[in-house]
Length: 182
Image (cartoon, rainbow, N blue to C red):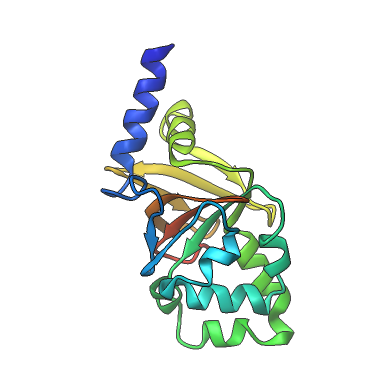
């Protein structure tokens, strides 16, 4: 049993970008992330997540993501949003598109607190793949690509976890490099 746990932890450590989970208060977007704060309280301080924060506000999800949770959030960076076709973000944050925006954002959230070690164990148990059901109701597939955890969305797009295990009082954030689409 100890060998299995050690193997899962070793796999998780290899899957993490160097130093991603080693700091007591990891830095994300130039700001320390405090495990005593909620997902939203930390995200508003990250200069790399201003687009995500604006989208969460436009979708009316601030109270939800400040709630008890726990939630696992795969948080796209500003650069991830910039990879979308020109005008997409501007269109999504319009009040008439709130439903579509909410669907996309809740597709980035999984109920519960899923750490990278747990995710790596699920991938291993699933013979290289793990299926995650999002709050939106869709599926994400997690797999390993070398040392990285990669998520594949419903449209076949992929997003790499670039910073894992950013612990929050109401869950955990994993920073990702692409927006996932339901």
